Image (cartoon, rainbow, N blue to C red):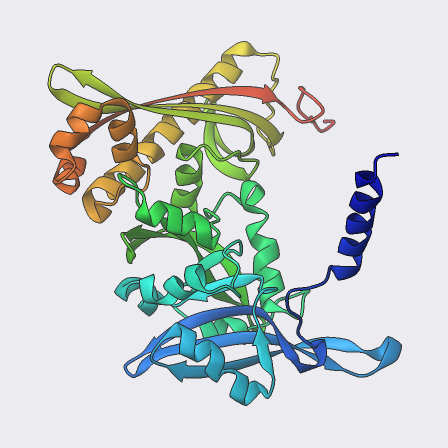
Length: 383
């Protein structure tokens, strides 16, 4: 028998006995952070954290959120300073959301996120949001309707992006990737507070537009829907559009079934333009009193033409704001030019901001109604 075999088996057996954690922390001495964010004051950054407090014992034990804040000159020192009012070490790896206030976003988010990327105890796979018309602390002190934790409520909401279609969800690493990319600018979803009775409820609606690490403007919910379409994100949301049916106009509900977008640079001599082609397929889940017979191809064709005109107009309006008001390349035109027309990009890389304002953009939207719920005939009351 080969003597090397028993030695190898012995080494493998001993290796199992020597395995273990490289480090450990006693759970009794940790405060778990559900979500955290940064507000800004004249004296420095304010770190706000939503933590979990256990009340009761046994089957009656419950987890309740507790909001704590501390101020410091840097994000890294603030995370340690928070241990003092908490009385235990704040544990961040299980955090579900990260927020920055409108003031932080406007002045530049780099000081607030640099430690998140560098720190070994932070995860960059959590949703990243900007508060609008409110502070981070006000958001964490609001009252979600079903969940006790604001962080869990916001994290769950961002997962509904395709169905809501009113914001463009981003994780920390995704925003950082866009921020440092050449020929591309980043965006973040926004959090707002709305009144529900006596309580303030956080909702995710709209998109913050960035240039480098500074926020330069907002997109509302409807504009965010078009932005998501142009970014090629699958959509399944619903919307209502006034539609001309023969001689009358009706508020008809449409639902996205499928969408595809192609953006490509085109050279005509020395002139550069961007070509945007959008294909949309719809379901019609509700027609109200319109009385549409979907076997009538002329009516269906008219509805498709109105949808195409409607979305083409909205695409044009969004592009006008991106180029003129924001001058921020959130659609990545520069990235496409750099990839497909590298010689042209080298000529315009240093003055791309100026070139972006003057860039000609041609759009084409094609629409098709592919579903009509579970019936093609209208409901007609008996006379």
